[in-house]
Image 1 (cartoon, helix red, strand yellow):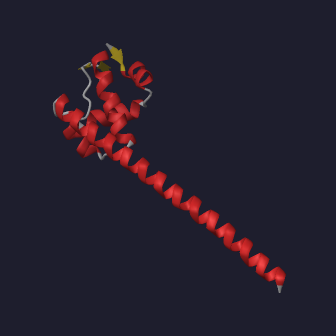
Image 2 (spheres, rainbow, N blue to C red; image 1 turned 180 degrees about the horizontal axis):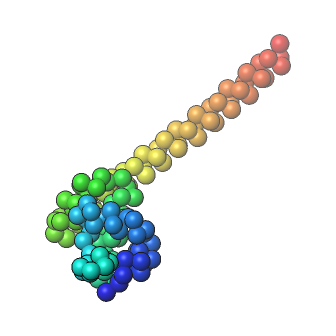
Amino acid sequence: MYSIGTFSKLTKTTIAALRFYDKEGLLKPAYTDSKSGYRYYLSSQLVTVQKILSLRQIGIPIEQIKIMINTNDEQYLDFETKVKITTADAQSFIGVITGFEDELDTESKKTSWNLMSTTAML
């Protein structure tokens, strides 16, 4: 078992975040000392923290994460697949937009050059 401090270092998250996850029902400590109130976690809970952090990173609300954490792995993997597809679609869209921006920039330079050439002839 890991103390909350050690577990926070292993997961690269803060103690405050772990307490928040506990309060919100996302990640309950494996054991809480009744006298000291110290929280202890198992290595098997590392996966859960990584799921939470990944979902938070892409902007999933806490309430949605609660549902996902409490579902089975198959449902989580289905959602993870949907997220990957959505991310790929977004990246593809960004590529299209970047291409349009490049074309506009090229056309803008051509227009500026033509305008300067026309003005110089006058």
